[in-house]
Length: 463
Image (cartoon, rainbow, N blue to C red):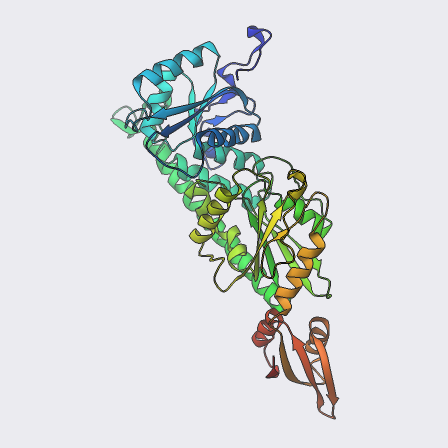
């Protein structure tokens, strides 16, 4: 519903949309892309084909769009579901609907129209001319959220790369910034390249530079990953739909204070902490960015280095908001994103499903899933109910494929012996003048890391 306003003269105008026509440099190129100012007055439009069958109802899709707009504090003046017969190549929606939308924008002093679809550059330009205000699509809105939330240097670079890749074909402006520059020397030079061509070249240069920088970050992350492989700690990665409660669960299990809030994409930058399981086995718990339906491909590509932590994890914990009315549809969306990363939850990687937010279920609707072997774990990350069961299940998964290994060590291999005592169950030890021989039980993760160690004489004697 439209929001109430007290004095039209006090309302912000289109100055809330940032524009810049300064000369492009590496330092301000990203800032020149037209961006939606936080708090801008917006109208949300959810166009959908009448004949198309989708996972979500138009009402729930519009509700999610409203939540996305709220994530960057847009002032939502109105939100509209818009059924259409077909997609118009020029404006996406039909002429009659466009005229009605134009009248609504003028009447409600709209700064930005957010459309819950993917718009082409020409469609976006035509809509802005017709509506006389800024128009962005779903991809641009999500990019805006990520741009506002990125904290680490890597996160900022990833968002900038995704944003510039998205804007590459949208450098269409309407001011003198587009006039031709004069080429040649003195007064004899003819008209040079258009400014938009210079912009595109500078944009391509900046994208190339960001990709090279992110390649260095990826190499550094690989080195860190190899370092963790030398330490016998299994990696457990939390994945799930945005706002499913991953960060709240992460804080509960690790006693941390990672930012967690009831909003979409509250967490962007990945975080890792150590957790001790009931058996004393240490693990590294990783909290990752949440997924969403129709996640922009630009973001998946830009965040691939970060999401590699999910691919490399020993165990994937899929956190679901079981109280959400479309939890099944969210499950399918997350599965699709994981599949695009090459992760198969039914494959070799161990996967554990968690039904979070059981405290929000109606009375008497508490799911009895914790006692089912291999089934989901029901818990509330907010209250802590069921988290002990989750740790026990993780412990059981890590230790269910245990190996008994006979390891021969000399007296100079004290570090390896300490490693074995920390991460295995020593069944028998036999000392001699040259060293010692250990019969030790190791879980599958520790056994895999033992096999990667150099100069260790180890033979499997049982399982």
